[in-house]
Picture 1: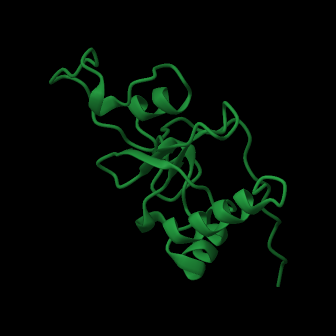
Picture 2: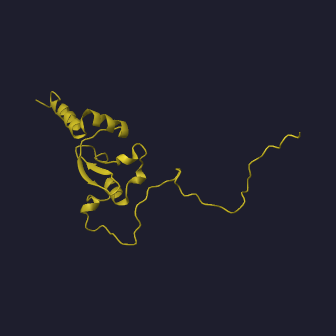
Picture 3: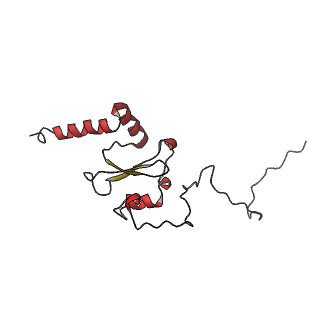
Length: 142
């Protein structure tokens, strides 16, 4: 009877509002992520990103990341470390903190986000003269 009256949907709505920090928390998440979901916290990486799963959603939409609050609206996919990327994209069913076969060697570099197109990006310095030079208008004679 509750399904017929859609009371289960209403119950889900109230549960989503409750777990996301009330009305203001839901509005904040909606502003930041354009989505408010209900899920189980699977883990957190050392950068503060939180990873969730809810198998009631469609496959491909049932795992997601909520980026750390310190980046606010300046988040992108390159801020997800490789091990969590594999879990998010179904390369493995085990999250990194539960995977006993995950290699960790001392020579492995730490994860860094892709800074292309930003102020902190690497810019190579060239000593060769450019083939095309910008036109400089002649100065008027006085």
